[in-house]
Length: 92
Image 1 (cartoon, one colour):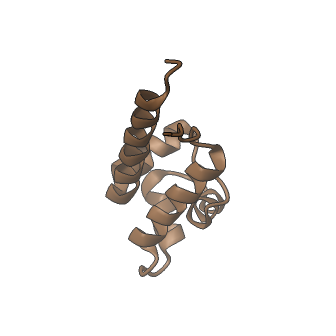
Image 2 (image 1 turned 135 degrees about the vertical axis):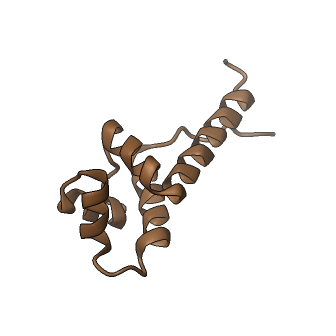
Image 3 (image 1 turned 90 degrees about the vertical axis):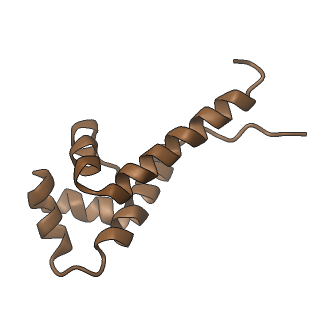
């Protein structure tokens, strides 16, 4: 029997964006400061995103996706997973 995957939670979103950011920026010096300047965000917020504690707000996410291909790819993966889950749900 197939089970329908759970929808993406805020915690899952934060963790996956954080993992994508760490993969793309971890080896760069002053990554938090540099990324915060590129996406016009508070360095503390970027630190929280990179650690996976918080997910960016919508406008910040758009700027982040424009700046970081790894985040854009992760969001596209989440979208595909959500579509697949919806296709498996017999109540839709």
